[in-house]
View (cartoon, chains in turn brown, purple):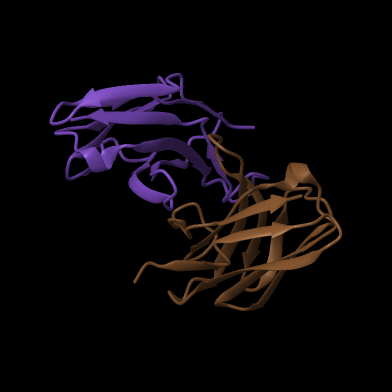
Length: 114
Length: 119
């Protein structure tokens, strides 16, 4: 089963709110990724976790805080976001973080910041 | 840094016909992987096809095939017998296999091509 699940599907939040996005996979993958995607644009990499450790942070603002509690779960904590942070947030996973490993994407969380 | 260029923002095809989506990339590396991903409207992104740079043979997956020209740094996707379900945004992507490089493991996407399939 090549499935990555993300919750919630939609999220509306104010600039002072704190919320979290959740991503889960049960494929035994040891690499997980967060991407941000604006409408009709390609995904932009935000973070990479490899074996539950943060391996890549693409200079993402600190109002985005990732967390990988275990090998199956990836969270993205949101605080004091700006309207320009409104986007589709995609999670992906792969067997390892090697180039040969195919990334499987979740359906995304559509975030609106008011 | 590597770049990926998709020069066709939009393409259209009649059902059952063949269409080719273009992709070029720029890299100084010799070892890498190339991908085509499909993202239907409001649906999740899925992998269509993958090509290893060290393989000369073009990858094929059922109705999908690629024309990989390493010297020209070109990686086009051909969709044969187009179906309504092929309508989507297609992204070409590059991934470095250079373990010592700063971009190792990162997927670099092109800007995408929106494919419309007419019945």
